[in-house]
Image (cartoon, rainbow, N blue to C red; front, top):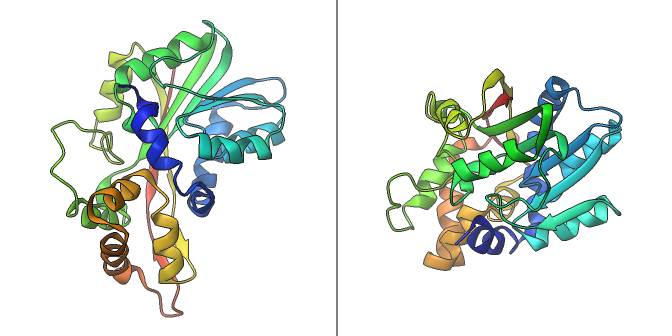
Length: 258
């Protein structure tokens, strides 16, 4: 079973609400695009492109964009944003593109959810043209990501995962991402971090928006929507600000590879 079978179903169930989450990654997209020199005429593939926000930002820089994702629900939004773009549903481990098709390939918080992350990264290398680069972004050090408390709370509703299971922080341990890309035949040449605070006007918005993500849809399937919602409300409590809004400090980490 490939990535799209399970992940596509989970991430597509509340795709409109996902728009409230993707905005938190904008500084990360900008930082990665700067390092990749995304500009006029650059052929860019984003694997795990979701609702297409990063691709739209790349188009604004003049890039020629292509996207692939597991979720048809998210791709429907991406197609509305990017009419005419080549946006496909498919497997990270079996990219439907010819060798050396792109000048740059990006994966923003996607590879850690792949059924076979090494195979997925080997595919990014295969479709990258000579001289091109691959950028992989994941959650950073869990100790610096306050949203981890929400993931930890929801994990209590789920059966214990097997060792090495896919998940948001599966590649966040020191050296884990470097080791993975090297196993896939890629060579890291640059890295960095971007702050990614999650902000919400109130707890109801925080819960609704967070429940759009795949791990939380899984919890709903196992424990039910009411239990998941109540667990999230409690987990968000420490993030409440004096004005009643909610804020969690996070950091995303990225590698630029050849």
